[in-house]
Length: 91
Image (cartoon, rainbow, N blue to C red; front, top):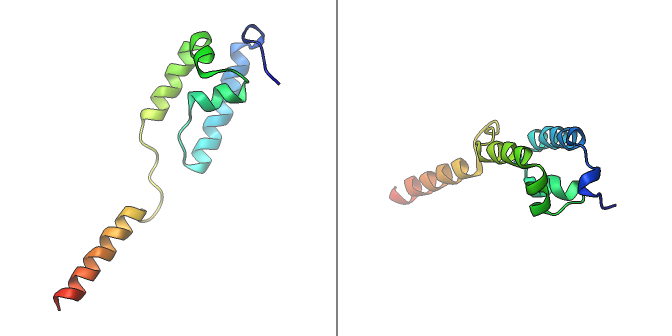
């Protein structure tokens, strides 16, 4: 279902944006203007032209670092493993 831009009230777009942000926080991903535009049946460019404030808000949310996951990251585990291997080969 493709929506016409003039048919989309800003309140609906903001509601969908809020839902997407909640989902992104639950999955530890970043929100995207393109993702929201696709959900609404709009192209990225059309969405950015029609809703520039919302696009800017999503851009700001996307540029903030994601919350770190609990425990060591994959990178931290790799560094620890490499350090352990170096200690073994020195002995």
